[in-house]
Amino acid sequence: MSAKDDIVIIGAAETDQLGKLPHLSTLSLHLEGARNALADAGLTPADIDGIATVQTPGPVAIGHAMGIEARWLDGTGVGGTSFLFHVRHAAGAIRAGLAETVLITHGESGRSRVDAPAWGRSPQSLQGQFEAPYGVFGPPTSFTLTALRYMKETGTTLEQLAEVAVAQRRWANKNPRALMQDLVTVDDVLNSKMIAWPFTLLMCCLVTDGGGALVVTTREKAEARGYDKPLVHLLGAGEAADSPMVSQMPDLTSFGAFKRSSAAAFAEAGIGHSDVDHLMIYDAFAHVPIYGLEDAGFVGRGEAGAFVAEGNTSPGGRLPMNTNGGGMSYTHTGMYGMFAIQEAVRQVRGEAAAQVDGVERSVVMGNGGMFMAGATLVLGKSPR
Amino acid sequence: MPPPTKPAPVPTPETLPFWEGCAAGELRIQRCTSCGKHVFYPRPACPHCSSTELEWVVSDGTATLHSYVISHRAAPGFAEEVPYVIAIVELPEGVRMMTNLVQVEADPEQLPLDMPLRVVFEPRGDVHLPLFAPAGSAA
Image 1 (cartoon, each protein chain N blue to C red):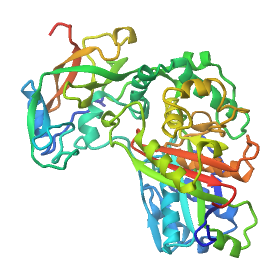
Image 2 (image 1 turned 120 degrees about the vertical axis):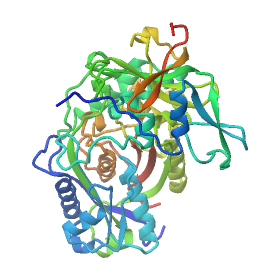
Image 3 (image 1 turned 120 degrees about the horizontal axis):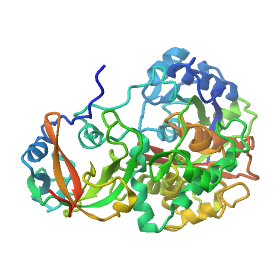
Image 4 (image 1 turned 90 degrees about the horizontal axis):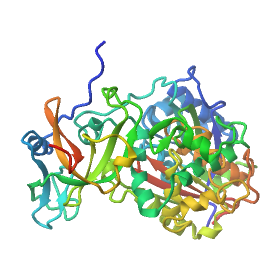
């Protein structure tokens, strides 16, 4: 691929701290992540001509606060996977000449809720009419609704679901920035506080404050600027939608947006499953990485629970997954996708806290809403 | 401050016949007169063939338990219900909807997937909400 069309990530950073940050508003979290990513790229706001972020506060507010006069803006907001969409959209825009260097920002006061959008939707909305009346209380009682059906149809056990949390804690144990680092057992997971049976607290993601940002451009631009860090190349990307309400998924045991976006991303990258050295699958809850492993075809139908329980995704396993500790142990602001990308970038650069040896290619799979939208990125150390 | 009340749906023009049906004790869903498929949630056009010729039909009030969770945290207005069952049920026509299970203990032993259910209607705000009880339980 020519240097002009080879899309690369040249800046990637998170906020200085993650966790409980009541002194930082949603906007401040975006801007701290953005400053850190620009510093990582060795750039200033004047070098940026495109901005992508979710609404709240949106690309107009980010551009205005940073003094950036963008000529390309993207406010795609499809939940926590939005930042994967932004990377793909930025790649298309840059190749089309609509922008040269795009800043993608995330910030969310998920725990402290400083200037966070209010929960809930209009009682006239689809959710307001057909889901909210039944006492769903955010993701823990809606995202989880599919799991029993999946377990019945595949024979996956509760212990295997718990193994996902156990495996990710092994990675978090190696990561000083992870919020939860102490090793746990299957019993610890199953005996933790019941949230929404069959999901206990340790099978649910954290709720934190934090942010992060990315800078995306072309290899040609990066080389012209004398960029001297390892480039992270976007080898392929895909995006897809499933259903606006979890109760209306066509199949509760599979996420169509994981399937379609991963197929598109793998095809564009020209890779197969054996070419993947490292994997991030958005883990708001313990069943989501299991869906991702199967929907992307890393394992067969009903095999993911055993695959995780056998240690294949744990440190030393053949498919290291969620190596920052994931949303369940590292951090989860609400829209976790930015952090999944950040860890993949660190692994490809070779600078992760729990670094996997020889990561040539990393795959990131994001979920948005409750199985609403999904996207997949294939990142690599070498160009396509 | 009074305790929060459970959320109540507010119908829109396209969903009103569904809610009018619930108030009349009927579970009404849409059927496409062009391709014959059933549709839920209410929509102005068929998602399968794009026809706008959808008719309202009355489902027989039975369903099966497709999937569920037992919530141990109270949503606003649900403090006295904890733990309570949030379910996805499947109607004989193949469409699914979210609901709560009632007249049954919130105990996994009592709630095998695919168990037969029947609809009951509970007043909520200005509408009646379709909830589901075990098929064999007393009306």
